[in-house]
Amino acid sequence: MSVRRKQRLRGERVPEDGVGQLVAAVAAPAEVGDVGEAFGAASGLGRRMSSLTLRLPPLVRSLRPLQWLKNVVVLAALVFSGQLFVVESLARAVAATLIFCCASSAMYLVNDLRDIEGDRVHPKKRHRPIAAGLLSTGLAATTAAVLSGLAVLGAWLVGPPFLAVILTYGALMLAYSYGLKRLVILDVFAIAAGFVLRAVGGGLAIDVPVSPWLYLCTLLLALFIGFGKRRHELTFLEDEAVRHRSNLASYTVPLLDQFISLIGAAIVMAYSLYTFDAPNLPENHAMMLTIPFVVYALFRYLYLIQRGDGGAPEILLFADRALLVSIAGWGLVSVILLYLAPR
Image (cartoon, rainbow, N blue to C red; front, side):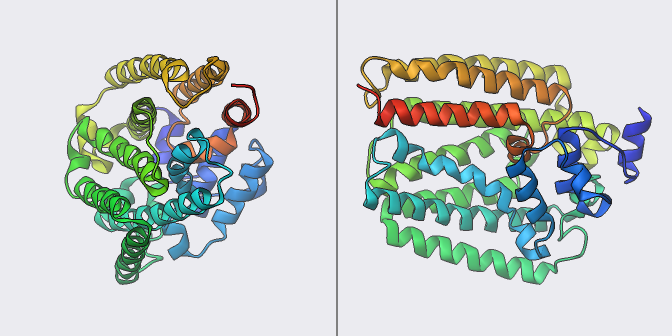
């Protein structure tokens, strides 16, 4: 084991560069002495968001506000159905996104309560407020119950179909925290199913049909990121990996690399087919112009995984300028082609 890895496992501060500094600063703020230096390689937006996160109270930090970015998937149906500028649809989609933020934060609290001992073994997760003793388990449980209630009430106001999605999401995440996370492969599929439910919920909230290709691309992308995170945990924690997550004993780096490569290729194929087969897209197949952005973003993320920076995708999005620009470029070109360019 390298000296750097031994230092990390002992909880010592290890100098890092680039994205690694930002990940360390956000995940383990108690070990970072110079926040400004740690954010040096990040984009300006990434620095501001991460610096704000470090200053949040323990309860708010346990809600993982940076991970609310995952709920942007709820807005996919709004954008790709051509209703982005329809006020009523926009309002309902935003409401659905906020409801998913409440539901997901409640599940993060439940997960942290369930994983207190495992998180205390992790060199970074041991600084999570509940694991570090900064947030009482009673307050965390009460907050989770309140957020769950708000999510159910909000979903009921949006409509019964959306309420069914929220209840299914909650049941799935509870099953994940209390069992599925220990099952090899199925653990990542459970997380990916949560993203698909977000996409389904977004369509139901504004009552529009969603292309099956969008669901497939969402599933594959979530699997791609999920297995990338498992690879990071396995390589970063090394001998302590199994103590942190028991099913990591069933994974190997070569196996995960095969999964990631296979899913990456499937994403390119599925998204390419989506750009010229989905009925709600421009008939001139102009959406194919967005394929290079997707391919580059996948390659860039693969590069970051191999470099050991795949543990926090929500941070990488803002820490790595190339990844941020590629995703922003994809979004901008998509909106132009869907709303401004001749169809």
